[in-house]
Length: 386
Image 1 (cartoon, rainbow, N blue to C red):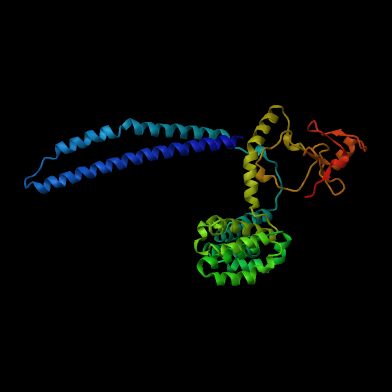
Image 2 (cartoon, rainbow, N blue to C red):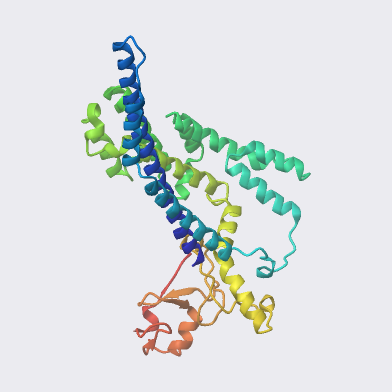
């Protein structure tokens, strides 16, 4: 993928820049040290002698030492390597990006208000509330307070967590207790666990134990192992950082909990934790080089790809963009439905139920997987649920 070569070229520039910067800084530090020593010698000579002293020998010695210590060609070599890497990176950039990408997309009619809402929503979910307000005002949109208010609440909670204040997060989790359970989320338990540890490390064992009896008992029947770990923390209260449960006081633990809160907060709003605009642009950036090559090849063959129902080549994008719940049978090339659900074969490949029926010819005899040499019978295939 061209993006990989772009990253490699950029990494080489960074590596050479760091090397060059380090060499130059080392040289400067050595020069400064030598100059300071010479200045000290000159000041001592002036102090010891009443007459004016000739500093020429000392300065000549300094010049010779500097020329010997920091050869100019060494610094020039590092700078030359950096310039070569930067030049190659610029060439990769020019090769990877086309000034005209209009031939790689179809003209689709969008409602301006819908696109504006997506952009405004992106600003708000990133916490850029002033920018979002300015965008809505300048595009002449209506009041988008309903888009902004939920994310203002979310960022208020996150800001409090940065200050080690879990009360807003606990209040939100308590208000959404039932919905979090429906999502099979342990967020509320983890928030209470973290609050328990905070009380234990900053307060006393008795206060922490009282908090556990008040807030953690209701989770004990389902999350016994987690509660047992928390109770074991009582033994290590004065040295929890050196205990087997040091994870509870690590900064990474707070960061993971903040990420989970963002995920659950957006989920309860019916939205992805990732900005749809950001996902669309990132996926399009990865798929664009393939589309540009396709248009060039199709133009040479005097064919029009935009009229095709299906692209003749796969668009290689990262696995982080492959999370939708729509399954298209690779055999029949049809989208699955309740009547024709996806089925998992013993070999791990998935096809639709109708494909299995056709492959097995409605009998119990073994049939070959359309993608590998493995054989299976229809009764061995299990329905996949999304």
